[in-house]
Length: 245
Picture 1 (spheres, rainbow, N blue to C red):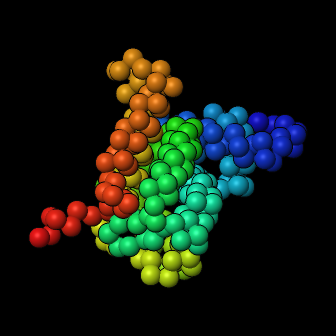
Picture 2 (picture 1 turned 180 degrees about the vertical axis):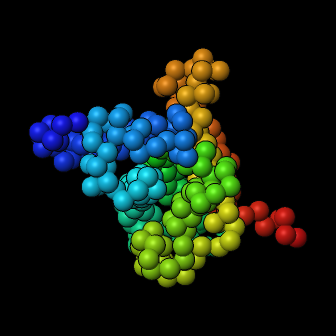
């Protein structure tokens, strides 16, 4: 790319092209097999421009992960602030270590409806970013510096003031804690399934002959079945206490 063309290139536009090119190449060739020069060629920018925005190839991947998590955090915070915190303040919800306890049947029905709407937003977000999630999934299965990539999602469950999710909920519910069971449940039975769904979305669609909308609807239907199966009276159980006796 000539210098005059470089000067014409909008900064935000060029940066966006670099990121999109890296996502395409990382997901197709793998992170390790992709060179910075490959990204420059695909993005149609000068290699020097990549180093202007990013220190290294790893810096590009880190930016992808951070952006993914930041946006996911925003979706989660919106749900917590407008639903969970409000229900706690109104006396409709009490969070216990092993369950969510609701003041009435109406309260639990409202929570289920809102949680389904929230999950729809999450599903749409991961489908939109399935290539980035696929990269994280692939890197997590390798022995190397990125094998713990998926555990970046664990920061949503940190029990300290640096985690805005914990800070907001504990501010409304002083006795709130992330129990070990809750952390395990959220990671292996909430985060991992939806990450896997996004990573294998295109592959499953191909073998099942389902359309995008059909696959999305089927996944959301399964979520509704799972969340309703956890209801016991006016509680949503996070642990089967009978297993301890």
